Length: 325
Image 1 (cartoon, rainbow, N blue to C red):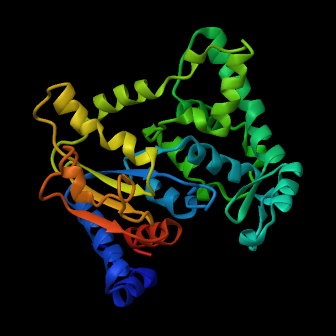
Image 2 (cartoon, rainbow, N blue to C red):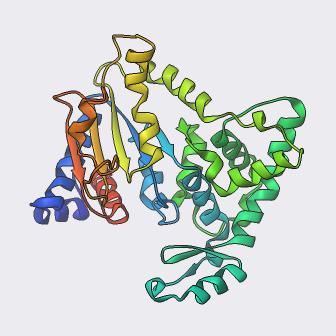
């Protein structure tokens, strides 16, 4: 095992109890899983890309510590938006104190707020839209069909965005993923900004909805990929936040052996969720990992961790530990 750097040593020396200790246990469990030959899925909910998780996530991808990602359409596009429009983002530290009128003023000035950070509509959305239109149009007119992330990879790999880069591309996790052709599943892509824009073209009759492959097709793809990549130590599940990014891929396991009746399908072999969702009546994001045993997702002896804290704080620290920083 390589030597740990000062961040990792600080974590080991100071994070000894409660959520802090859970963070260390989860990081060491992730590390052990990889050392024993396992693979890892990371799922991204919320606005982790706008929180610039790419600063640590990109290096995790480059060092082969992540083998597949499940993310929302927002996270798929917002990393690229930050890449091409970072200088036009607006930070609002006093976001809790904004009046409804101040919020409307942001909208009127083409700023869409995500907590303390405003995404600039013209520089971010429209800059990507024009290039995605060309890629969607080419596929639509030639009868080709692709997944949402494949269209994004085509745009990144074409080099057409390089003229706009406003951050070091090594801090973009989508650039790192595109370079490796990392598998991604994007459930519910249609609720993202680019998904909305694509839908608008379909409503206007310019594109066929089928030009972009669907969530069902993502599940079919994942059902083929999972058995091929879960031999040996198996596939772990590292969930950042709650919601569809995690809910969608985790159920491929019970689907395969319950619905497809493939009885040799292994459970997920590691599980960690970073979530500040409180355990409550009917809450899936706030459910303790053991509940997943009853759904055929995890086994009795699967290493299970839950860190009830802010993912924007916790995830970079765990990634720093895994990168020996």
